[in-house]
Amino acid sequence: MKYHRIDNRLFIKNREKFTAKMKSKSIAVFNSNDLYPIGADSVMPFQQARDIFYLSGVDQEESILLLFPDALDPKHREILFVKETNEHIAIWEGEKLSKEAGFEVSGIKTIYWLSDFNKVFFDLMTEAENIYFNTNEHYRQAVETETREDRFIKWCKEKFPAHKWEKSNPILQEIRGVKEQQEIDLIEHACSITEKGFRRVLNFVKPGVWEYEIEAEYIHEFIRNRSRGFSYTPIIASGFNANVLHYIENNQQCKDGDLILMDVGASYANYTSDMSRTIPVNGRFTQRQKDIYNAVLKVKNEATKLLVPGTIWAEYHVEVGKLMTSELLNLGLLDKADIQNEDPNWPAYKKYFMHGTSHHMGLDTHDYGRLKTPMEANMVFTVEPGIYLPKESMGIRLEDDVVIQPTGEPVNLMKNIPIEIEEIEDLMNS
Image: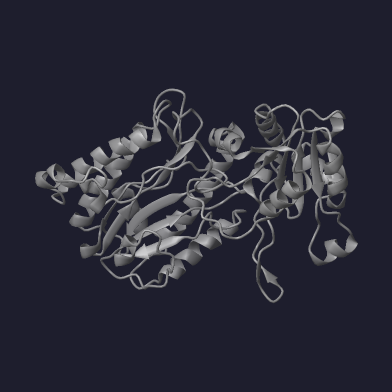
């Protein structure tokens, strides 16, 4: 890993929060991700399953975390299983976690080699009545690949059919949604790396550059600041491309007079940032571009104020829709007849702003977190309104990451990233 080691007290606290919500006489198991093949002898760069990382800090493949708060032997109340390392592995793949290093990372005292898992697990299951399975129940999940977690669940159901099954995900949705200060600090650090990338790009962009060259500038700055790279596939969308919400080809030349919508974010220590900025290719906004831009910025600023404890996510989006409708009326993009005749299930403003405004973020760009219960302090959300005008080959989206506070407005973790028109123009022309 490129990042500095995280204080293991974060992971100790996270485990305490999880086990406090488990039923008695229950075991919970969390598996690392697989190494996914590309072809021949190649695999994709490893990324750890977020739940085992959240609970242990372990960031390598072939690892298992077991939690059993009611184990008769105290040393078996939390166990980490890691792949046994040796000199051959160290030479060919690099150093892996030893038992001592596993304790330093996680704070877990009992660490076994992975080869001991079946024997230890069988013994502990004779004491347990329930087994918590870690299924992915995120509202946007669309995973088709069978994971290591999936294979474990199949195996466990065959071997232990008499045990009752419970779900880890509802607990994780609750506790991962509310961040510890250490987590907020890590997200803020990822945001600061994103800021460095954006400022670099402001000095680089000019008519004639290619979208992929801008992408390259970002990744250069991210990696040189200890980031693994992008939190998600970057969007560098110039001109008409900005109207394709998930445009990722990044293969077009940026033309004089066009805008570039950039939706990018650096990751740091598996924590994410998620930024959108829209800038003029030639360093100067036209008056029309300024009018649309300032409307989006106004909606973002007003929407941010609504993110307070007690807010309901679905109701929040209704209110943001009202804010956007007002701006679209002012711009002449909608008229009163459009509002009077709108479909309640697809309001008139959706013609120009068709996506949501906010989502949880943290270890995942679209992070776990409850959406049907009131918002709480220390939840981290994006705020990302946009206006898209395909006929004008223009799309503008602005996005920051904010932390809900116990009272008052959220704290903007991207407050230092330029967003006002005058600052962007000054930096691009300096």
